[in-house]
Length: 232
Image 1 (cartoon, rainbow, N blue to C red):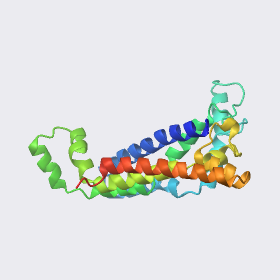
Image 2: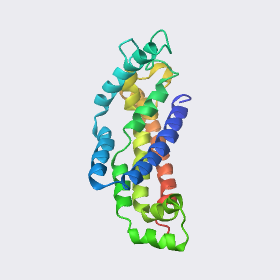
Image 3: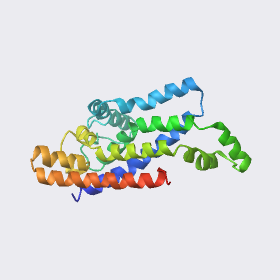
Image 4: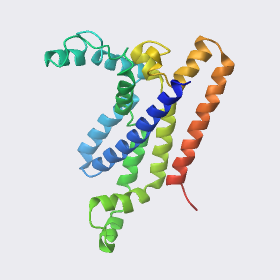
């Protein structure tokens, strides 16, 4: 747990808020363009979240392969940045970073669609009234009108981001090909539960970690409710 707990918290604090903020920014940007390109870009951004984890891992393992045929290694060698292939997926120096990048790439799920729907359904007359009352730029428009007007969608997106982030873990095992991951560099709580519950058959310990994971999800969900829930 001295490796698993810090890994899980670092992963969750980067991927959760990062994916959440990215979802909102992209949803807001898509809402500013015409309908047809908006639909196309929304499908492009949403499609990675529909891809099975195994299929996604296969694609990224080709990119980060540890030999000269790996796309990233081949690119870096051709550019003269490195002179021999790097073991990206087996090195504790790179594995967590790659897991975060891959997870963020596939994080535009139903929370993103909910935010896009929320932005599109805000009454434009509210914006007009806001500018009459003193709003001077788009940033103030987002802070004082857009976000308060779509609190239910923001809450839903936050809860989905929290649950999805804390239950993530398969991607590290699929990328590295081992559970536990090399030197526990990408080992998250879900991997730890699977390792002790279904590989070592230490069910009591695995059940205790499951309860701890549930408490983390509950506490962060309560925080999201305090930020975006109904205060009445």
